[in-house]
Image (cartoon, rainbow, N blue to C red; front, side, top):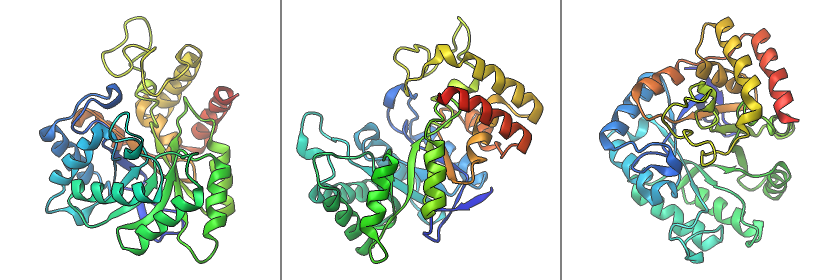
Length: 317
């Protein structure tokens, strides 16, 4: 699998990574994957050359990390593990989440215990916390790296200006954020220009979550007879998308797929990983067939990439 540098960290990641949001729970309606199914998905990913597995403490309130820890026993060294901290692990308990120094430390230790490892390779805040001074959070993340519990630091869902604030704090003497994991797809392309600018300015890479728009860009949810799955009910589907005004984009995607000899899902992923600032697109699946289809994606021809860029520009307006 094609690999890309992760910021200036020295690590290289495959351009397609395995997401685990549905390991051990039906998180956000993503379709429960039990232990047997998760083992098969990890095997399929390994066979395809995937070296990065993305998870978070909040997925299933620890279920995804716990299941991943069991599955990776005996082969931990074959994968890079990314996890996140921030969300409240006990609903209604403010102390069970946030980006205070205390919670970052205890949250990471809890993740390491569930993952059955002494370190994670990528560690990030899941989203910003306006109630905690950013300097406190950044020092706690830097401390985790100095302890050897986190190899590379990054962030998730941070606006560009906040990433720049974090980089300025780090300067040349402190550990810095090497990546930002954000929602990016043809159906939600709005952040692409900012990500490209950050990459050009500071070498910060991007990771994309929901690169298929929660399955919308697979094409199976078009028309009145919608397929079963996480977007069966568009009013409750995650992530939320303005599906009604995206029908033209899906038609364009299908034409582009025919030109490339790929499926719509593979073509949508190809557009994401075709961006030079993109280190990896994180793909999840319920079945081995779905995952194999996604992992067969590749960067698109320049002509088709440009065609879809124009379609995405219309969506982003």
